[in-house]
Image (cartoon, helix red, strand yellow):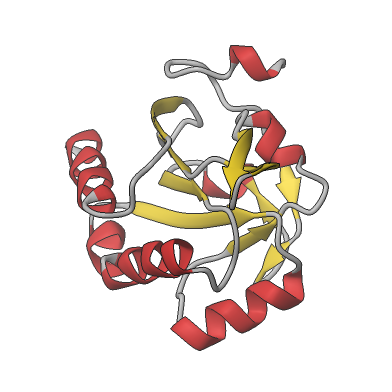
Length: 158
């Protein structure tokens, strides 16, 4: 499946990736709603705020039948420290080879302190219980985003 063909309404191909607390496999989430969110980097202000907001709404997502999984290019070791420091109760995928990022087409060229750098565009994907991509948010602003995703999950769950 090419990057361009992964759009809402399409089946997300199964994939596996290194993660904490153990290997992630999309097929393990069949029968559940999955919120897959991509963020640029552990322990940076926006990414930390976003992780904390998903953490603070974790029970509401679970009650709506959804699981949350974060994805960045950080190492397992970095993820372990980040998750421990902020008590993140959901898996974090370590996508050091960018295979998951490329599947969801979230790698972008961005300006960082005046320099062009390649990095993850903050994005969230909502996958239904049969593995179909229902909705995507790209170029996410952290404020209010988690509430919007939770509302979409609740609509999907009903």
